[in-house]
Amino acid sequence: MKYASALVVSLALVLTGCATGGGGPGAGSKVKIDKPETLSSNKEVYIGDFRVTFLTQDKSSATARSPMMRGAEATDYAKVTLRAKLTGVPQDIMQSITDQAFADFQAELRAKGYTILDPAGLQKLDAWRKLGTTPSPNPPFDVANGETTSQKVMQTLIGADSERNITFSPSGMSLLSTGMNNLLPYNYGLAAEQSGKAIVRAHYKVHFVYFGSETDHRIDYLSDDRKQTLTAEMSLGQGIQVLSGSAIEFAVDQGGTFSKGGSVSLVDPVAVGGAYGENLDTTSMATKAANVFSSAVGVLSGGSATSKEISVRANPDFYREGVIKALDVANSRMVRAIP
Image 1 (cartoon, rainbow, N blue to C red):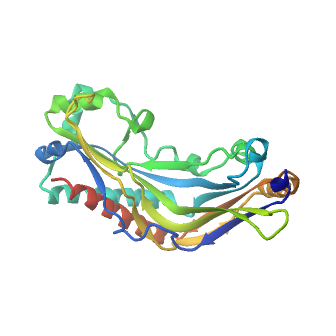
Image 2 (tube, one colour):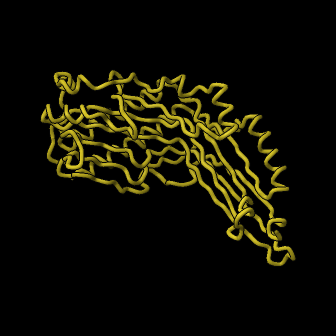
Image 3 (spheres, helix red, strand yellow):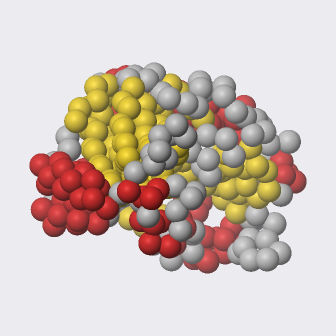
């Protein structure tokens, strides 16, 4: 077709040393509160589960397509994929961040008028003793940050393994075993009923970069063949975020439709911008070869895709400072929102 033969595909990758969006720790403040009366009336609590999940790898992509293309011509596109990895942060730094966040969390609860009960009391409950646990961190640190040959091949061929993370509990505390969507088992709520006290859990998910994307479709109306240009662009910026969905939950019963359990969660992420390390291009030779092949084929087909991997080699002390700040703000924002 006339339009397809004149199509020019353009792709771009933009890297920045600081955050491309999200603002500082005060940017956005919305939280969601469910059953506020439960949160405010149960002042004696056990802390049953506290976890911080650190993302160590993630990816995002942008695809530009012409709105004028239909059917077979819809194969005309420009796609760019950006994969980011966090490196340079040792296990002891992540553990110290978790320990500090736990101390801040307890301080916020006490300042709000809560009494934190001795966790030994939970061990007296039949339901609590039936709960499964897993060692912290989960998965083990070397597994979470390693990459086998088969994983590299899969990532190159189909773009799999887009997100990796590792979860820590405070020193001396095991992680409770959870099911799909981070849900706790039946016996957790039953233990709350047996104790007659609320059992509190807090979980946070920490990201290490921001992704931005932009796509564009232009027509050169002055050219005889109405040349079109499709542009896809991805940007990456260093910056810490405690992601939306991070929450504090009060269990008082076994759950279900008529549960009185309450929670407070982040709707807006807590963001701390600023470069805490160095961006390194660690795109594999296999991926670079695939990019060249796609570009060559795109000349004939009208569609092209490219991928890039950036490793953020962190200064661990800077990373620690930024994450602790973000978690402290997240703790304060949620606890202080309780009526």
